[in-house]
Image (cartoon, helix red, strand yellow):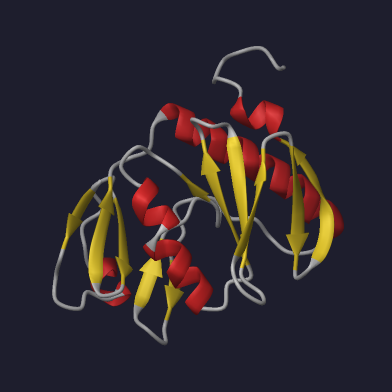
Length: 167
């Protein structure tokens, strides 16, 4: 991950950058640049998206969008590009995902954020109502929307190696 300190970079500034395969985010006035994801990262993203889509679509509770989709916070001029509104850690992004991004989501009123750790094969579900707290999941993950439980995701298929037989 490459990080450049610029004077009060905004999400609007990020939108003017070239489409070069990197992900650009504006957080706390700084530009954060993330290289293209790995195959494992994309596998995990795809499996989580597929699982979420089944739950959200079946309940008609909303829609699931995959990366890259920008999420703008107009009141502060910040913006990020999460993986399906889930953050999947890469070697160069762990500190940012667990630090400034969690603070951003909390301060902007996001109710829940998942941080996926491909090395630990775990999902940390952060909830921000009444103070931030985290639950670690390694087997099954409960999916909630606006406090309503939509179902669970079996994390076995999510963390299997791409191309490997199902667990």
